[in-house]
Length: 289
Image (cartoon, rainbow, N blue to C red):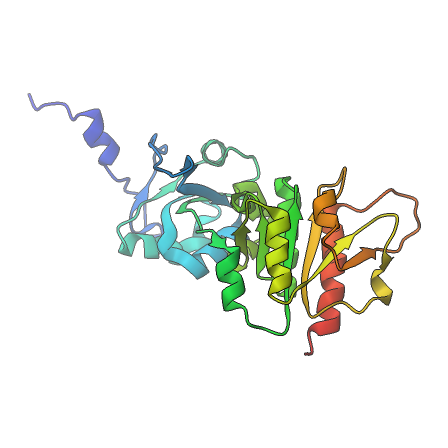
């Protein structure tokens, strides 16, 4: 009697779907549950692999850094839209898995996966010093986030930054910009934004000032009107967390304090909304220069 194949060999077996009517299934399609993996950890106990989900986030990642993709999980409805990605993975001997939505929810740890999840190598974090050394421009805008950590706010801010040409965000923990939830909310904008790490926000802002940037903060109760201000061409716009705003140490370094005019019927705007309004005004004033 022939020996029964081991579980290990069964797990390695590829599925053989009917590719005649679905040519996008050709390649290394594997209809199986994702295996448990031991994820390598870098110094500081940071995982080197992350999950990215949502159609636009995954498309932009594939467009900009396909080589970082490790594995794809996709449902049958989304698979035709990612035919070129599956072909790329097959050519580079990387598997993709055709799975049901319930399995995608487990892989993404989110109900908002959008029918696709990518396992990718984490985007490297740049240093503020290296960014400033390369940016010898007369016009540039950076954001500095002092205590902002909500992934949906971060994703919305990243999306706005990409739209208005901001290429760097200074944070104590810039990896928060690249969480699955933040990247999904950013709708692909995360591929165009550099997370700039700093351990000391006042020191980081001082380095920016020495490089020719002026610092802008916001206030709900004081400061000059956004719409009656000449915003500097080289600016770092600093936002704090919603409850308390920027820290006192950071506020003391500001060159300009802005107020966004309104009815006063609410205490303040969501930080991502405030960022959109200020960045939009900065872009309006300087986009033609």
